[in-house]
Amino acid sequence: MKPNEALTIGDLAQRTGLSVSAIRFYEDKGLVEPFRTAGNQRRYLRSDIRRLSFVLIAQRLGLALGEIEAELKKLPMGRNPTARDWRRISLSIRKTIDTRIDELQRTRDNLDGCIGCGCLSLRKCTLYNPGDAKGAEGPGPRNVLA
Image 1 (cartoon, rainbow, N blue to C red):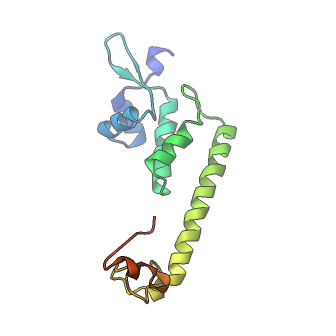
Image 2: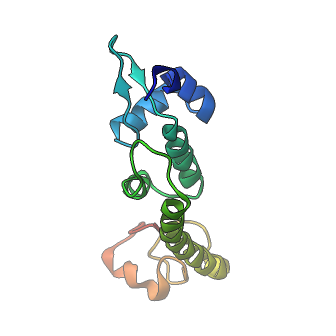
């Protein structure tokens, strides 16, 4: 890559809207891999704009960092992803989102049965404790929806 094509961490922050510390965090997680100049300064590829933009979008969709890491490992480092690359990831993410939508719809449909106290030993709680199954384990909350 030509030196004038590389981005400084400040340039990358400006292009993605991320803070420099957030970019370093994602770098530590292996989501982007800068190279170093002769003066030991970080430089990023233009394709890192897309990688970090994907991170932001995926987080807004509710994906956990581990899920995002797994998806980014499917993308090539050092070049912009192709339409085929994105399509493959989109199908994978779609399954995750569909599962979450199903969970949210079940929760919404059972919401009227929840009194909202969070106590999982109540016989009436249809969200977290149908049939008071957790009541036998003692008082208080036992588990939370993922």
